[in-house]
Image 1: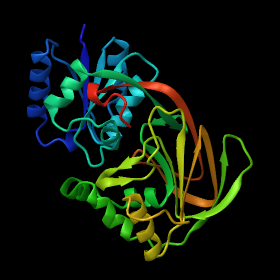
Image 2: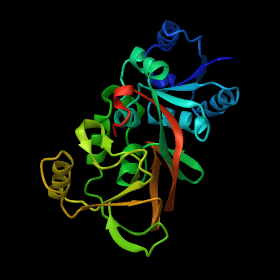
Image 3: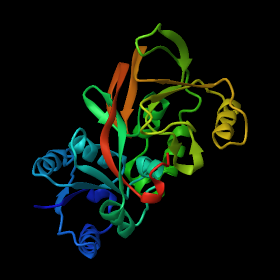
Length: 298
């Protein structure tokens, strides 16, 4: 039986052939056979082939790419005993950051062959799961306006340039309902429903967030003017108390309703624009490979 399979996004890898050799060699060093190999393509995430590999009984599915590739791989293994191993090579790699995974191939493979297993929560929107976050508003605008070329050339700072173009856009009204409670109204620039708290660049959006805490963290951002954004950024970097333009809540089910169509996103991938964002949580639904020393890390 094939013990492992690899789902790779070749657009995020400089030399797929060298990557395959490195993974195969690192697995062989630990006595594992050569993995099955699947590549995503434009309009084809590779999720179907990954699901077939899971049905065939692979113990570990490696995801090599950005957060979108990780989401596709997670969709293939969620609810099964197959473990997800993340080999970060994309732009954000936010799940890998929060699980404190190594960035090198040998280290990442060793996490799968010698590390621990951890059950984490996932979120779900419109039948699609996510491991990092779902959003409506500014975050989705920022992601939509960042070209693949910019992401490949600059990495995650490319998102900052796109964000600047939208910082002064007007707020929009939302109604938010948490866990079926009484809805409340706000005017925001963005609503983010997160499964993890750390973002690239040293930004800790939700310091207490954990991917296995049984809750989603809801972040409402109302900042519009430069001084408001500056106050939020300083607070997220731990250099200034939080202002009133950022609110956080916790829930297992989140319903966001807007008056007009807004752009939406899921782990960095665009969703069709909509007037609602309804997010549910699947507790402990995904098994991930983690380093032994970081088993209890957020």
